[in-house]
Amino acid sequence: MTRKSAEELARLGIAVPPVQVVESQDIEAVVGNTDLAELARSEAFMNERLMIRLATTTDPNAPPFATVCVNDVNNRVVIPRGNAVPVKRMHVEVLARMRETRFTQPARNPMDPESGNGLIPHHAQVYPFEVLRDDNPMGRPWLDAILSEPAY
Image 1: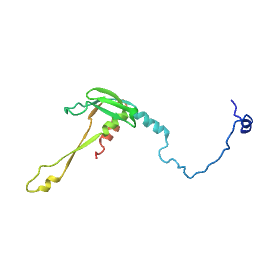
Image 2 (image 1 turned 180 degrees about the vertical axis):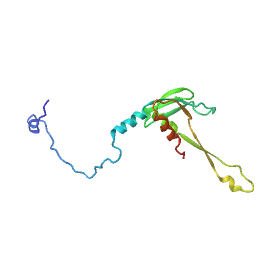
Image 3 (image 1 turned 135 degrees about the horizontal axis):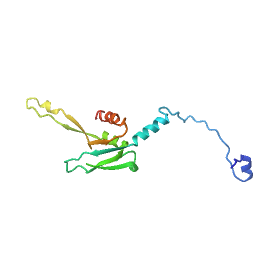
Image 4 (image 1 turned 180 degrees about the horizontal axis):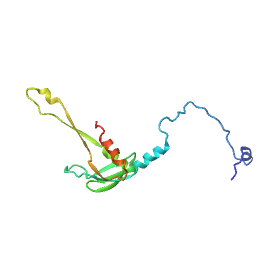
């Protein structure tokens, strides 16, 4: 297939709009990580499958499974408690970052009522889990780094 010039197209009755060069100040240069190979490696790492098991619970009000969603509903998984389940690393990251903080107060001293005004935070994972299999040697240091981040 050969390309036809604008004159040939005009003779055939096909209107060709003139080419206009538009210079705009609204174009912004991309700044940051543009190494596509590194982005592809990161994407492949996050899509690897791990074998995990969610801890069971004695709380009768706790859900029997965890629903984990990454970016949208199409990337949602439901993980039952107590069973070994293969999930993508991206879902494990969400589980690792799901933490809750509960507060307790120290016992009040009748001689010093202000001492009972302090709150003591207790941080824990919402869905405790264990990794049963991770074939990537970089997987354990990656998970340890996430779990060692401070809870807010």
